[in-house]
Image (cartoon, one colour):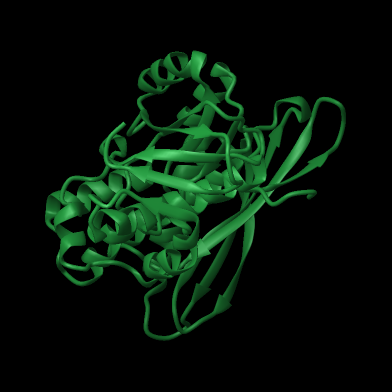
Length: 307
């Protein structure tokens, strides 16, 4: 715990360390089963970001004793259990409280070899930055809640959020990634800032290389953003410089608070092709080289329109 990271790691032996994390949130989609799937994939993500493998999960549930059917809760738990099964993890129990607003997530235990931990602090100047899922999940979830999302966008967002980051984690380990983090509530630029600050480098990001869900830019142009995205922009803007050609909707997409987003991976430029190839073979939703690390002020980001 000498520096902030995606999860805590506790060494057991010279060969095994435990990876511990926890995450839960309120419903972001209408279907209870899909919510359970997404919440589980999101909870496992921090373990994958550290290069680990999830093995155990404990359900965390807030549910109103009156007003919502327990059949709906059963569907939530079923979704989480199915996604855990896909990850190769066992659900071994949990805890439930009476809560006016439903909440679901998991406390997750994983394992990792102590010498193969992928941390947020290992990036060096001149490395490629690779993203494994498109952006826009926060905007999509807000549009779904407001009844503004098309059926195609809703299905695309749910499908993307449901994908485990296992394939991305296995690819980055095989390719020798230097650093990684998962992109969740603090948005792409917030999580990138943290990785850069811990690594003592800065970076440039190329807007035209950043993958975005189809239909998100139109919604961004209408100002459809969750509150978390606006808070991200308020806090992280001081660390980010934008080319004057980049308009406000595109800036906000880069700050958009993600749920179950992809991995952001820093890798030596000479191994960039190996990583992209491995990600494509694993079938990750994206395998996009979106920028590079540079020497300079720790944590600073320059966003250019093109590479």
